[in-house]
Amino acid sequence: MSGRGKSLGAMVVAVGAAVLLAGCDSTSSNSGPTPSNSQPAVTTTAAAAITSAGGATASAGGENSNTGVESATAAPAPAQQPVTAAPVALWDPCGISEADITEQGFRPDSREVLTDDSGDKSCRWQSLTGNSEFTIVSTRQTLQDLLQSGRYVDFDPLPVGDRAAYRYRAAQDTNKIGCYIGIPVPGGLVAFVTRNPKPDAPQEPCVAARRLSGALVGYLP
Image (cartoon, rainbow, N blue to C red; front, side, top):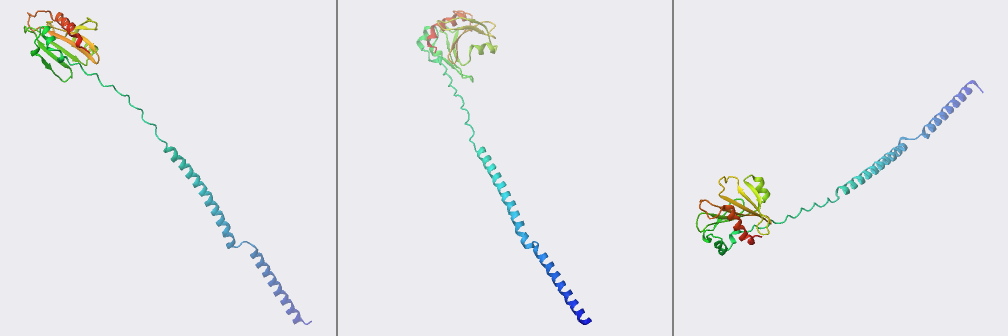
């Protein structure tokens, strides 16, 4: 073979080797993961993350739901207020019969109904001679109220019939022209009060008050 022929042969071999190497590089490059093949993996990972987050959201939603159930629990019923009994009606002394008033030495036609802001029920009569007066007061005040008020003094227990009673005077009555006989009753007190505005009254006021209360105690409740 001539020298030219050898050179041509060497060139053909070199070209073939280059083609073979290029093919190997292409095969090696194609054997790795392509960008398009890697995307599904990323997508799958993201989907898993979303699914996990969705589970957490559902769990959180469950907790919120439970919380809602707890907050919807019915509140306990309010305690019932105690029932307060109605106050006892005051006895009205103005209902005493005219015959009984006359029998005790007082004029029925002189009856005077006394009213004030206290709500007490009171009636007053003048004596036949005009030198004394007699008042009956029906009040919600108790004997303890009178003691604490400081307006009355000289309290002494003095039963009237089979009823407990107390004799006392007004603190301002320094001349002792009046006297009280107080008898406790349901819901308060009834006071029989005598007053001698004139010195020629037939009886000392406390003696008169005790006599009148003993004669009329049967009217009390």
